[in-house]
Length: 472
Image 1 (tube, one colour):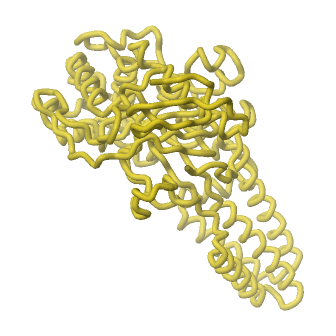
Image 2: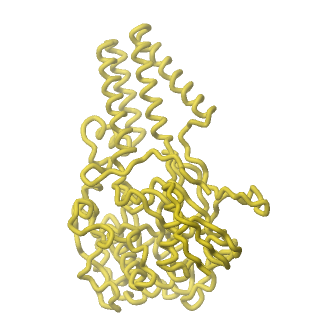
Image 3: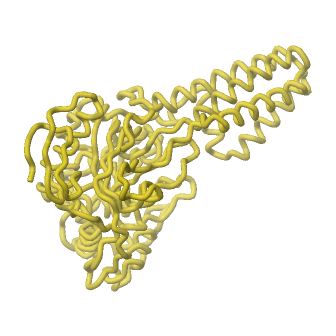
């Protein structure tokens, strides 16, 4: 299994971690300029460089190179050292991969989205249906939707929403609505509904052992601590979230200033919800360094420009800068140094498993191990980022798509060969993560003996690093 994965991003403590909106000076200006409109930023730089060419002043050019190099270096340092708020330096999560891992994102990271155990898709969808039914009056009341730029009236709720997967999915998407100025923003009632559903899921003490990944949990984050204060308010304990059909039972009107988003908002859920599969998921990222490599190459090209400018002048130096940038980009690609994280695979060493089947896929159950953080960007969600290792627990049996019949999902979309992940309890989850942690930290305990169709065994008697106990 992939272990000792190379990482680049680091945990930052409270007071150090900050979003791009909190960056100041030239660095903050350039980042906000680019994020507001890449086309406008390019036009701005083209105008600025053109003006400097007309001035033909070497001192002005050198000053520009120095300023841009400092700003880009500050941005590079922030992105990999101050962007992720550290909750716990090492943690472990077990869950079902809800979508086939896609190609690397712009920064080179690879994403793994997990539906955490012990919940399955059927249970989560049914809880969602139960919560909407219990709050039908609330979600039909236009007075609860005066929320521009989102909807200003209640989205239509088809009476057959609990018998049709597509109808339910469509309703959740309309309930989420959209803010044209912030793609991460969500309508207040959408957040309230999901917080209510999460409250129902976490109500079962036998199943809420991963509450810390879904909520600001006092058992893991001391209330009143600097870390606690650095996290937005995500829950309102004064609300009866499991009330039944009263106009305002399961919603909160709490408002708070979010320093990361630099705006006033309501409750800020720490979890994510996937409207395609109608399940909550825990986001994990395998670290890449593509953005860092790009910034380093730009800084290198800027200094090549500065040296060439003193020798040949600014016009020739522009060509030298472009040449150095493209040469370094090509060289990085040629030696596989482009900063893109490796694609997730399960690294099978089994003659009965064809090599083409080693890629991770939707429905696999995996263990991810790494830094538990809150991302100061993108809504301030909990994540494991960077992932330092991940292990396969079970393969997806590629079951058929689910259907809803009389409010019940007849079939899980995610099927598994040997065991039901909803049967993993707190003790088993802790045991599995102890095995992984011991192996990754280089301090494994004596072996653990397993037999039977249990997690990590595949139905055979197998020895794994563990805490010297026998599990049947």
